Image 1: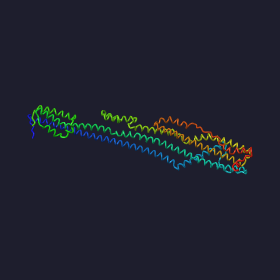
Image 2: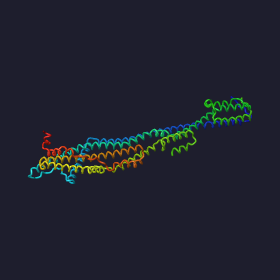
Image 3: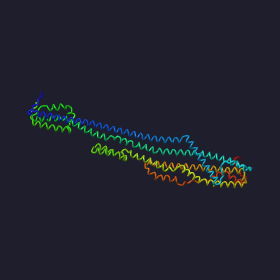
Image 4: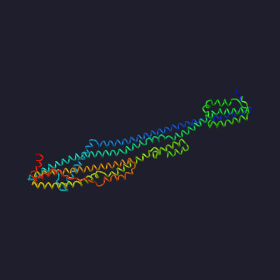
Amino acid sequence: MKTLLLDGGDYPMGVLRAGIEARVNCQLYPLLLGLAASAVGTGLQVAGSEESRAAMESTRANFLAQQEKLQKQASQVFQNSAKQASADAAKATLDKGADQRSQLVQALKQASATDAGLPQDTVTSYEVTDDPTRRAANVAQTAGAASRTAQSTAAAKLGAYDDFTAQQQLDNAEASRQLAPIASKSQGNARILPGQMEAASHAGDSLSQWGQIVGALGSVASLGAASGFGAASTGATAAQTAATTGGWSGNLFTSLAGGMTPSVTTAAPAAGSWANAVSGLVSPALSQLGSRKKQTYI
Amino acid sequence: MRLIEFESATAGNPLVASRARMQRLTRHEYGGGGGDGSDIEKKRQANLDAGMSQISNIFGRYNDDFYKERGKAYTDFAVPQVQQQFKTTRNNLAYALARNGILSSSTANQRNQDLQSELSKNLTTVGNQAQGEMNKLRSDVSNARSNLTNQLISSGDPSVISGNAAVATQGISSTPSFNSLGDMFGNWTNTYLTNINARAYNPAVPSLRQQLFG
């Protein structure tokens, strides 16, 4: 049992106890605060990463939705174009073209007969006459008119294929015109996607930055607190030296400080600012105490 | 705005300042907006829609009536020529038949029917040609519209539409120039009328029937 010999009552022991408690409080609270700050910082960084990930996922989903919408538009254009190229549509176009051409030619013939006094190219009823030449003329006219009408109709049907081809080209051109802006939009969306993803990857930067800052402060506080414990041995040595210088000797301070910091001494070999501050405060106090009370510690 | 608030809130932090500088560079690379080019692209796509709407308005007046007008323009150009050529040929036929003394004959009936068939054929040709002119005009309008659409997509600027549309549609709306019809009854004349005239002055010339069937 080691005894502390004191000639001045319990005052030095009270100072020692208060110093140790103050030192423990000064080192434990920053340590806990640092650990908490580190945890909060890590949490903020995780939240920032999550925000970035969510933003990137949202960007990707938005891009796919836009592309799908454009794809549907393009598909609709294609379906319409394909529908116009079907056999039924082709027959309708051919019939319509043939009718238009027949009507146009018929209108020209009638206009020519009316305006220019040209022979009416229609099938007429037989004129009742005894003149054989006249009757023959009527027969020839009637037969000729029927033949010419048939020829015009055939020519109109033949020409309708030109109309069909022309209509197909027009439809294809129209489809291309409708597809062009859709394709351009799709390409534009794809073109900016890397930039959007890059921007989205920074969506959580603000949280991450704060997380880094808070985490860094926490690390500093933790290191400082830890270094403070480690520096306790330094402080103890200094105090022991001071005590020896002042008449104190023994290993009470060493045992007290060493008992508390068996591991952190090696964890924080370099004293941080916090530890320096703490040891700087504690060591002079112990030195002063040693100089004031020259006692022998057995 | 969000970037500005972020920069204000994190001013003095070198790491944050570096990241913000990188974002500014990214934004500059894409030309502004939100830093990822999306604003620019949205504006471009809006311009495309506006330009396409503008093009639709410009070309909306090219409807069926417009194309029929072109067809009518062609028939107004061609039919009178056909009529005039027919009258001339018919007169020449009458003269030739009269010279042969067969003005009222089955041959005359047949020649007149042949001539009328030739007229019908030529009017059919004119009608088809008119339809072809309408189709050609439709194609020209379609090409002009496609060119404007391509210009819009390339430039992304709808303001180029109004200026270029006037140039593109100028040729479409201008008075068309049609090729001359030529002698549309020339072949018939060579086939029938020449033979009749030759026989009128030289009976030794074989008739058309003799030429064809021996």
